Image (cartoon, rainbow, N blue to C red; front, side):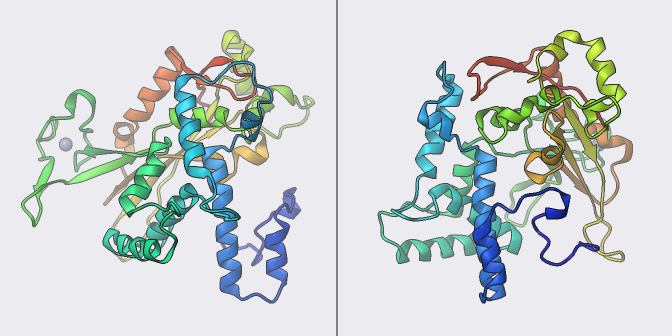
Amino acid sequence: MNGFKPGYTVWTSHGEVESDTMFNNFVVGESSRSTEHNYFQGSRMSDMVDDAFGMHSDFEQGENVEEAPNEEANIFYEQLRDCSSPLFNGSQHSKLSVAVRLLSIKSDNNISQGAMDSMIELMKELVDPNVEIPDSYYKANALVSKLGLSSIRIDCCEKGCMLYYKEDVNLESCKFCSHPRYKIGSTGKKLAIKAMHYLPLIPRLKRLYASNSSAPHMRWHCENRRPPSVTCHPSDGEAWKHFDRTYPDFAAEPRNVRLGLCADGFTPFSVGATPYSCWPVFITPYNLPPEMCMTSPYIFLNCVISGSSNPKSKIDVYLQPLIDELKLLWSEGVETWDILVTKFQHACYFNVDY
Ligand SMILES: [Zn+2]
């Protein structure tokens, strides 16, 4: 983070408002650095759970509701309600926030699953048996996945020619270069030589409409027209206006989703270490105001392409699952439930940037 002032976590000089006063009190107080860090982490964690799972207080209070959510939205809300209630009276944590925190601790510190399970076992012994915390790392992961934020592992050819996906899912070797799909591990099990992780886009777009914190902003681009001389959002650009003129039916519904796609590679290890490249692909909904669409909760990681070298033109191979989702959104649309107007609508896409 070169160039940033230490401790400049709330971008007050860039228009961000200091809302978390408790956190700021901690920073100026006498508390130790680690307490600050833990408190901040805890506070960020609850924000993350709120952002990711979309708390829906208006829905619970019955405001703005003209029509009941569809079955899919109902299941989601029921599951969310079940696991987001406080662990005990006065607790800041819920079963869901504990599960998300456990997942984060494991990945931040590169802890083995066995060690996580031992720690969870100890936590269970220390707390009241009625306090519901996940029984194991597997259960914590399953809880988060159940709420729609899962990822899919797709095997690929080591040389990047193809994915073992759809009609090719059962192939044992590459249909272009004949390279085998599996190697035999030390336990005698077949292990995929290379795989990618794909995080489906459509469930994430649906969450934007299921959450009070994002649903109203999905119409921002249409409801906040700027004067012609001001450019502060992709919707001020000529490309966006040209698209609106070309597809007036699409433009007529401001909730239709317009997406930007961005991919760039980096080497996670220092120069001189084993060559290794990592290509994350990100999607961001440009319906949102500028201060939201460029922030991490709304920049969705879609897939990570890892390997010993830059995928170059073969990046297309890895983008197949995303293209399939985008085609579905564009040609047929996907029904979702909007918490604000409780009307079914179609989510479509438009690629603004590449
Ligand atoms: Zn191949």
